[in-house]
Image 1 (cartoon, rainbow, N blue to C red):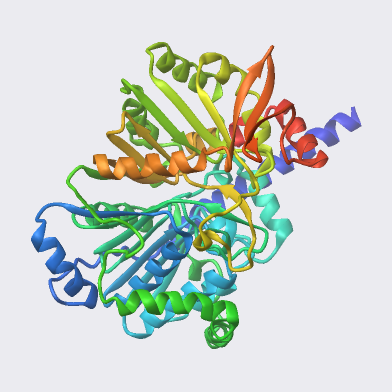
Image 2: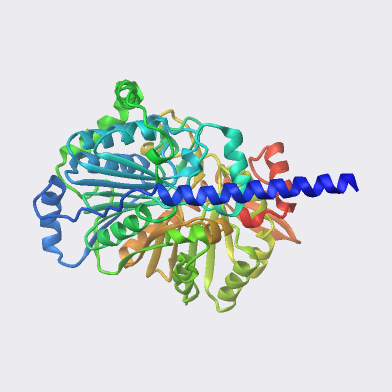
Length: 520
């Protein structure tokens, strides 16, 4: 009897404590929201970006200038160039921003823009800011920079308190902002799959991501700005200054660190590329074709997805009709591919209608999240039996193009591109994976366009990455998986997960039998 009373009392105290935490968190959040602000609208000729954009837009009224950025160095240089050309605003929205070589170099460009009077709004998801607030607080100390965090924790310096808070509100804590966009002067937009960090810009020592961004100029920029403002002013976003007390000495210390890293050999390697782009004195990327398109749309989940609200606006509800409308073929690139039972059924329906469906994802050796591969592996046989063509990117590439080599000469590769094409007419490039996390837990965004030449470029990326030198093609042999490629120009068939070590295979296998697919 005594033991039962103690258990009941303990449960009551824990429950009461949880309610108090949740209640105070809600009141805390409501009190400390920052003042609303909106995009500073472009003015003809007001800034350098305005002046460079005007002749292009005047020649193609009502159309969008669009280029695909597949080259990692170009993706870095175009961001840095736009920060240097900006004279009005930088609105930057990312899942994470690493404090590594390229992350710090881009931070340096953003800080230099703020020093010139450019208003900077930096919106980051909290899951990767977390206990590493120093850079964000340093930037926030600048009078022209404000940093806000999506769905932040109140615990900024204590790992135990942070963990406890996540346990007490698990359904909200797992909801993250996966969006990625860079908006300069409300004119130029770069949106797609890249976060800010070395692995996205060929500066990582071990492995670098194969990724894709969309560079845009024109009416679509206002769509991007509307999405950014909606997030910036949403109830799930808080200023970092409301969460931790700023330290005045942080900013000077950050400036010193940024200048030191810029002076290193690695820093000079990247800044030399930026200087070359700036000297061109032109906006369209030199490394990519420029296309003019009318049917370009920025699609996004609403920030309220973090509150389990407004389901009708979810991005998948807009994209699924595009996919299921296919008459000829569908090509999907998704680094984390967990179709689920429903997705597998929908894909099978397409194949039954004689639509050719081909999917490229990471192999176990190439993926940076082995847990996701464990869940994906459960669907491979069913997908192959349904008739789809399935490819897995290799971990090691024999790069023929020296521009694809990393700063450190690493040949490691991991797929991070998130894209699909339908019938050679329509394509999507963005942050969305084909997995439960993107569908239900994360907020996502991307660019949907109907333009044959642009779609052909996305298809060319798919064709290149699925060559036998770069990927394995999977098949079934008497119910067993086989991986096909070529070695010494001869066909090769492998009978187990290629290039993956014992511990990777073990981790993937264990995850595959655990009931955690909805969180992956």
